[in-house]
Image (spheres, each protein chain N blue to C red):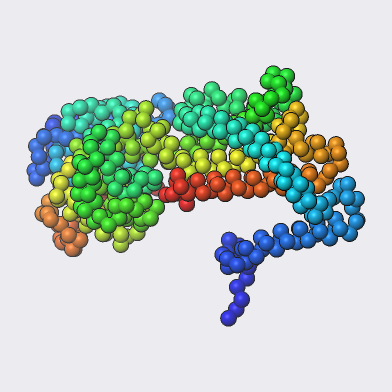
Length: 262
Length: 279
C-alpha cells in the first residue's frame, strides 16, 4: 500500500501524528533549553536552567507566594474581562443591528481601538491611582473596543432572511435583537470572547509592570531588579498555562451554550 | 421605451377569469404596484402589477429571472416597501410584516439554535400559546411533512429537503391567511425536488391554504397551481393569467397528459418572447 503524504493541502492526517507533531516541537524546545542553559554558553543571569525554574516553582509554590500572585493576576484579568464583556455584548449587538448606533459609535471606537494600551497607563495612574482599579481599567481598555467591533460584526453577519422569516412568523421589530440576532450571533460572540480573553492575559503584565504590589507581572519586575531570571521564566510559564486553561474552558463553554454550531 | 405605459385596467374583484374551484372571497389583492430601486431615477423592477388571489387558491407566479417575482413576494410579506400601489390581505392593507402572511424562503431560514420541533413551535409561541397547545400543533405539522422522528434534531443535522419540509411545517403551524413561497425548492437537486412537490401537493390538498408560489420551473408551476401568472422580463408586469384546468389530486404522471403539455407549450412561448427580447 502506498504511504499517504502528510503534505496534501487541507488533507487529514492520523490522530497519532497530530499529537506526535505537537509533542515533538515541545520536547525539541525543552531539550534545546536544557542543552543550551546547562552547557554554559549563555550566562545563567540571562538564561536559567530548567532545574532553576523548577526550583523557583518549588520555593514560591511551597510558601504560597506563587498562588497568591497568580490569584491576584487572575482577579485583575477576569474582572476587567467580565466588565468589558458585560457591556460589549449588548452594545455590540445594538451596534451591529442598528445603523444609527453604528454611525454614532464607530468613529470613536475605531480611533481608540488602535491606540496602544500601554500609552494609557500613565493617564490611568494619574486618574485612578495605583490600586486594583487601575489594573482592571487597563484590561478593560485593551479588550472592550476590540470586543465591540467583533461582536457587532457577528450581529451584522446574521442572514437577513433569518430575520425576515422571524417577522413573517409574528416577531416584532423590537423583539428581533433578543429572539433572533442574539442567538444567531451567539457562536460568533463566544469565539470573540475566547479570542479576547487571550488578549486580556497579554495586557496583564502591562497592567502590573508599573504600580502594582502583587501579581505575576509584579514578581517579574521585582525579579528583574534582583537578576532572578528563573522567576521571570516561572511567571511567564504560569501566565501561558493560565491562558491555555481559560482557552480550553471557553472552548468547552462554547460547545455547551451553542451545541448546534460547529 | 418604458416612458409610454400601456393602459391596463385593474381587474374588478371577483371578475378575474380564473377563480372557479376556489372560494369567492378575495384573500390577496395587489393593485397597481410599482417597485423602483435606487430613487426616482433608479431601475423599475415592477410596473403596475395588479392581480387578486381568491381564498383557497394555489396561485403560481412564473417569469424570467430578474423579473421581480421574488421582490413581489417580499412586498406582499411586508418585508420591502412598495413605491406605488397597494397590497391588501383579507381587506387589510399591508404596511409591515405580520403573521397573517407566512413565508417559505429559497434560502434555509430555520433557526439553527432551535430543534426542529422548537422551530415549528416558534410562531405559536410568539402568539402566546401554552406549551401543550404548541406541542400538539408542532406534532401535527411534523407528522404532515413526515419528520416526526426528527423532532429533536437541530437543523444542521438535516438535509436540504428536510430543512424545507420543516420550513413549510413552521409556516403552516402559524396558520397564516396567505402562504408565500419563494422558490422553496430552488436549491434542491431534481430528485428531491420531485419528492417535495409531491409532498406539497398532499399537504396542500389537506389544508387548502391560499398560496402564492414563485418559481421559474414551468413543470412545477403547472403541477402545483390552480392558476399560473406569467410575468414579463424587467420591469415585471403580469403578461398572462392562465387557469390550470387539471383535476386534483394530481400526480407526477400528469406531465405526460395532453392538457399539461398544451399549457406548458403556451407558457414556454410566453416566456421565450421575454427572454428573446432581453438578449
